Each structure stands twice: as structure tokens, then as C-alpha cells.
Length: 488
Image (cartoon, rainbow, N blue to C red; front, side):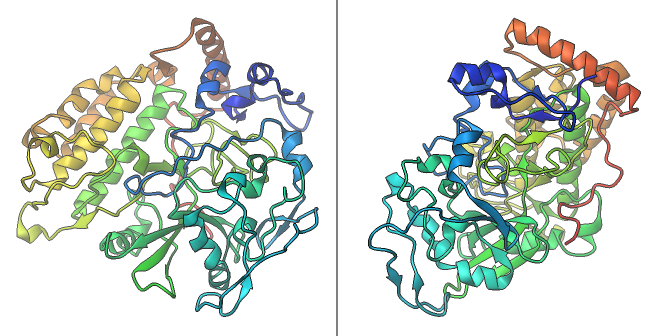
């Protein structure tokens, strides 16, 4: 019976052969043979990582930097250039080559560093040097370390690239990896070694983000199981910029990666996002940007050994592909992120009216018709309806039962859209009509090559037999939907 543990799509032996690189070594007794979750042709298309590359608590409205750097093709290439040792709660890249001629340049003293220090080598960006928006993180390395958060070696004062003086390519090296969003950075928490995400925000640009995020991360709301807002661990005031703060949050991953396998897994997702938005609206908060990029999941159940926070296809040490389980085997929790546009309203003031403000989803009908103020709560309904329409109804067979509800949620007239309470009630009715085998059935992509359809169907049947034997419910259910990094 096959295991549920999988590797990323491009670890397929067929894809390896197509790329001219060695395929994965055969499994040992201690490591079960892995099954590719996607076919190799689809995996080839996803290697550009145009969407699922930034699996973190990021703002979809602040612009994603286009990074054309390629990634390791073999484990040997990465291993040959890396000398890793775990210090300060994360991988420590030790240079194995002499410092390039000219050494480092000294940087002036600053209130952040508390004195001069060695600056990173002045490498050209094309050769793997620091990008302009990475300088902020490098300049604040010492301060963040004092606060209990250690950045990766790339941002360490005096950083020497491990490829310096060698013929190695920087894009094959762990410390050649950059963030896809300049205002987002990963770090290791010194107290427990947990990976966290740091989000830099301007209080002038997003004056309510800290307030709303803190509200849902404070008692009594934080302990409510219906709360699906990203937990906030800490707020750090940047010492040399009174307008800028850093939000410390858990490492999350895009809700759609890896892809869902069954109708039951999709039903669980629908239930959680409806429940989460209902909880927000009950507390008089409109998200105002709850599109697909702002819905994430806790990756720890699916990825017990996690993954590289900036290149999620790979392991933390950048030496291989991250392995994962299915949601049926390891249920997870979904979260709303990015409250930069969110607002809390006073119900005594009546229905709120806000000027249209564009988030990540540019298809809101009322915003296209006029610039007149409108109620943001029906707009939230449209956003969620459009997520289901685009990422499920137009992508998979098997979820057609959601069509009537989604049709009403994305109605051009906001007044005709159901409230979130009505959405939850109608969804519960739809859910109750789905049979056991319907929930067990496979989500089938609308565009699926026939050979892969046969392969995936056989794999799904074998998996389903295993789930039934193990008494796994068709709809993944967590006994307790705790927040990520429960030690916090």
C-alpha cells in the first residue's frame, strides 16, 4: 500500500530524465518510496514558480519582485558548494574559500548597529549581490538578533558568499536565495529555533494593520477555534524609523500548494474560510482583500520537516525536495493574512461606507462601475466567491455543487449577495447532501492528460483503501485547530 508521503512535483524521475539530471536515489527501508503528486509535464510548467513561490505572510498589494534566478538541478550541485552547520537556530554557511582580494568595506556607524561593521562584499546584483531592498535587513541584522530573531547568513555583517572564488553559480547556493517580496523576510527565533516571518509595514500607509492583527491575536479572540486570522507573535518598532514596524508571524504556505486531492479536502477548505470570515464579520471587521494570495495554511502537519522559507520546493538545507503528506492524512488549518486594508467598524454607526480601494483582486464589479462609497462587507463575500470560482470551479471537476452558492456570492449587485451568515447556512445544507463516496472522490483537473488520469486514478484508489483501513474521515478534521508554533 503506498505511503502518503510525497515529494515536490519536480522530483519525478521522468522529469529528472527530461532535464538531463539524475533522478532520486531508490528508497531505503527507513525511507519509503515517494509518489510524485503531479505529472512531470505539469511540474515542468511550475518550475517558474510564478505563484506558489512566496509561501509566507505577505501583502499581495505591495508588489512581487520578479526574480529570474534558477534553482538547483541536482542535490550534488548544492551539496558540493555548501558547508552547513546549525548555529543560532538555523543553517550557518561557512565559507570554504579565501576572501576575495580587497576584503570587505567598512560601513559607517549607525544607531541600529551601534558602531561600524564589515559590510557585505560589493557584488553586482547580477552575480548574486544584495538587492536594494535587502539592505534594510542587512543593516538591521544586529538589532534583530538582539530582539531574538536571527536572519540567514546572507544578511550577516561581513557575509562572504560561499561561491566567492569558485566556479559555482550563486543560484545553486542557499545564501544566494532572496525573498520574492522585499518587505518580507524569514528569521529563526532564538528562544526555540522556530522559523518565523517578519513583515515590514509603514504605519502611515497601513494605519490599521497592527491594530486589527493584534485584536485577533489577543484574548479572548485568539483562543476561539473559529478564529482563522494569522497569529501575531510580536511587534518590533524599527529604531531608526518611527514610521516602520515589523510584524512577527508564523511561517505559512499558500493554501493551494500542494494541491488538494479529494472533494472532502476541498469541503474542509470551504468550511474553514467561511467560518473565518464569519468570525471576522461578527467582530465588525471587514478584511477588504481576502483574495486567494491572502489565504494561507499551516504547513507543519503536511511538511513535518518544513521547507526553505524562500524556496518552498526545497528542504531547509537546500539539498533536496521538501516531502509532504496529504491533507486527509494530516489535516491542517487555513488562515487569512494581510490586514493592511482591513477596518473595524462601530455597528452603532450603521452600515459602513468606504471609498473603493483596490486589493489583489481587480474584478470587483462595484469598483468598476463608480468611485462611490460602498459597503465593504458584501465586497468580502465577492472576494471569497471569486476564490472558489477561479481556483476550484474553473480548475477541478467534482465541486459543481458549489456553483449556485458561488453564483450568488459574485453577483454584480452587492445588495443581492448573501451575508456571510447566509453563506454558512447554505453551505451546511450543501455539505449535508454530499455522500460518503462523493467526499472520497478525487478532484480531477479539467485539463488532465489521459495517461496521467489513469495513473492518478489508480493511485487515488489505493490511497482511499488505506484511508478507510486507517479510519481516516473523508473530510479532514483536526481534533484541535491550534495556532502554528504552539510553543508561543
